[in-house]
Image (tube, rainbow, N blue to C red; front, side):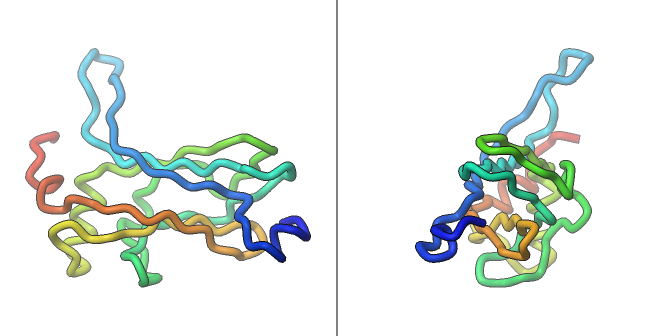
Length: 134
């Protein structure tokens, strides 16, 4: 992290979250997924040491081991990495942790220096659990 980032608190990693699906080789569409993107917004290389999803304000991970993507990863300037988890899997983990309805969750990426970068989002737990995507 650069000197100015430490002083002014800007994050070299920009995090985002979207819902979506992708085409399968047989022509069908995949089940609904939650996609997370980590973009290196700095001019220097950054390392992603770990990623997790937690209820907002908590550190306990949800769907641990179910988030797919390369970790650790090094991102050159302006590069990005994508991570994904099935929406139904994440919703089930949130419900099992006592967070039903539309809880606020945080996607957390920890850099190589141990600094956590967070992106808050909502998850419609009950709706995703009712999906017939199996």
